Image (cartoon, rainbow, N blue to C red):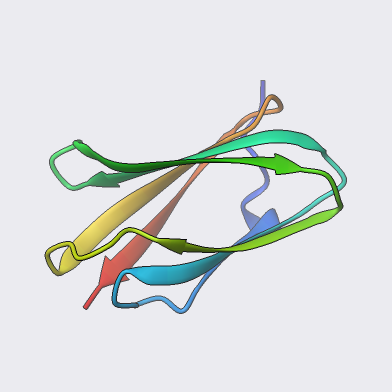
Length: 88
C-alpha cells in the first residue's frame, strides 16, 4: 500500500463555502471513496465514485456546515490521501 500521490489531487476553490471541486488525475481506475471529517473526527459526508478515465473531476457539496477546517480522506484500492479544506 502507498499513499495516493498528493500531486494527483486538487481541491478548489479552497477556501470555499461548502461546495468545491475535486480533481484526481492519474492512470489508476476504479472505486474512489471520499469522506469529509470535521476537526473532532466526526464524519460529515461520504461520497463514492467510479473512476473510469485518467481524470476524475466532480463538484462536491457538504451542505451548510459551520465555518472552519475540514479534512477530506480520499481512498482508492491503491492507497489513501488526505486534504484540508477551509469553509468560510
